[in-house]
Image (cartoon, rainbow, N blue to C red; front, top):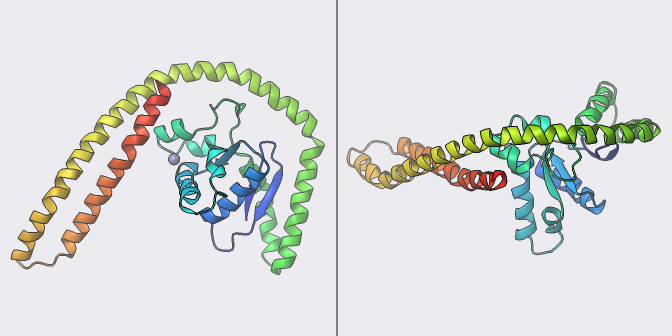
Length: 249
Ligand SMILES: [Zn+2]
């Protein structure tokens, strides 16, 4: 199952993935979040998902899917974000964003830890029974949340107020370090791009040579594939690094 939760941990929607998670499942939940007029869309790999969602919006001939990326803000969850590259965290990290109120974006994990306990019983059920059982479980979870909502909201509000000054200081302290690191990465990426382009230019020449000695070309094809991957990686990373510098400057 994949769940859509809000910052308060209430379960809004659940989806039976059937065979593993795909962006189609996420797009369905994204669509739901847009209908509810949520501002942020938080996801563990939103950095990869967002270009896909943008593509869906631009490549489909209807206007229906444009709003998803135009009206909502991508939000990379805080602790999952720690495993992403630094510029990824800067570009998509929602924790620092204005209006996010120090949200970590990990409430789905909390609900997952509860809902996963139903796994041992529901795996022996038929699909309709499983869905009913899980729906009951979700309703129960939401009721628990609602009972403690007033207390929790006050707690969140106070925590966000306390954290904001601390995070402001932390951010200012980190900013210079990040800027230096990103500029270093940017120059390294430019060098890599140069090398990859040169190698790609040499490939036809190498191909001719290989054909002369009649050696199999599979090796060269593999080599060319690796080089073009390197080229593509360098080409995509540079604009991302540049936008991260703009954010910090
Ligand atoms: Zn990322």
